[in-house]
Length: 449
Image (cartoon, rainbow, N blue to C red):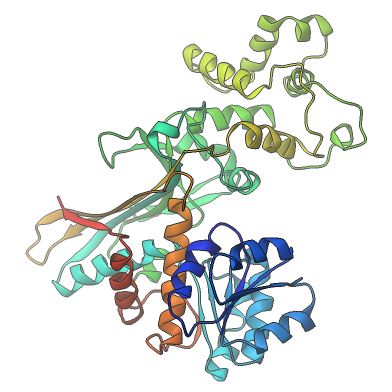
């Protein structure tokens, strides 16, 4: 009996995988019953229930009635799910990074004989599996990994990247934008490099994966712990980053320069404030107060582009044209959402969601610099390129949901036995997962250059 908490787009491929086994009884729980029901209707033998995870009693009751809980709800809720599961001696699977709040339950989980498997989606997840695989292979050959660079991106397929950011959203844009404000840390030539959120977009570099893609990458979160976590003590450079198409970072940087990523409440942006045309909001952010400039399209465009910390005039023009495409220079009233960030999100979600017949793409590449036993050097790469199905399962949903489903089934089958709050860092856990991923057509291409 499996409890699936959450009915978002990742839940579908996970539920589909688990529903193939007739002995699996799946309960899908969501805050809104109709969302859970819509998913349950697709899989015979599944049932839907409503659940508010704020109710400890309701959560306890549901978890106690199942053998394992999959938590695909926001990561801030995982710790309470784990706490309840440990109390009732039930296993847990999540696709999220292990947070300090989750790790607090490690000792109790071990004592209760409970497996809490985390970080088993795409990134984190598939990235760990194939990083550990190559690192252990190199070490078994008597060699060492001297540099590890890993980049992953969820992007529109090239033919669907038809907007100024070369990016599309399949769910809320808020999380994507907030992540761009985070400080990034990585190791470069044995030095810890820290890049502040405001400099993150400036730090992006060209990344060559395939000649057909114009990609850039920038560091993501804190990579400094991975030298130890992946057990590669000889690595002088360790960086995990995000991939975007060229042009994305400059556009976002311009939005940052204007102040659009500010998520503090503004009285004039609340729901009951007077209507405000987009060009008036843009003028306000650009520090323009006189009506003549606001009403003169050319003057307003110049005032706005003067705020960009960009020297290239053609690039400024491209970004202004992109902002026009988004409707930021128009007379249209803004969606009053309380903050500059949320007002921007409303505009992005209006124009940049995946449309009918469009497909997404995920691209992951690890690049290992290796020194062999005899002192010779080589580069090894592990690359995953997956496309979604138009109007069907998205590549991102598949590559997060399927590994999660596989790990769940392996726990239920007694093939994964390591207790505590864990992530896939051990070949004993990882090898069976990789074998089953390949059967699902999720193939990572490994090459030596």
